[in-house]
Image 1: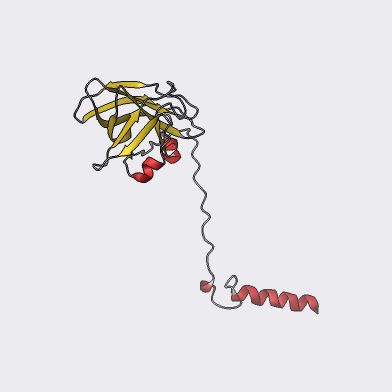
Image 2 (image 1 turned 90 degrees about the vertical axis):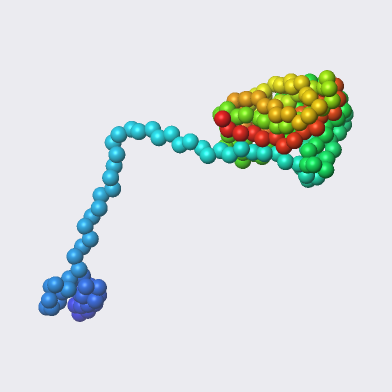
Length: 194
């Protein structure tokens, strides 16, 4: 008796799901969906994806100045025209890590996006006649540009240099600024992919 009841329940359950027709029109029976096999590619193809790295620009406000790494022998002042003046004499000549100059931190996300690429570091600056400045792009573990020297004029002028970033970086990158023979007035700094 149990087997007959269980069989009856099973038949009723299947009928209600339109899986079988019980004495009715077989046209109400649903057709099974065709089995779709996934396409499998047997060719080995390498696709290069270019990153859409964007320029990173350092502009100046008091928060940016407060976040700079500035040795005791240097000072940084924010000017009314949104430029800064870096003055003093740097101790040492370190162009790696934080550098001996005043240093800006490059955000880690930008550093990851730009890893292994050539970049151009550009800015506007001026100083007293006969003065110069040094600028370095420094990584926390995969090299640095070394100090790049630039003679300054008494009017704002454009300066730049190119540098190839390392493939990987375990920490933060920095841009170091060092005045030589007098204060440096500095406009925004931009790091752009080439």
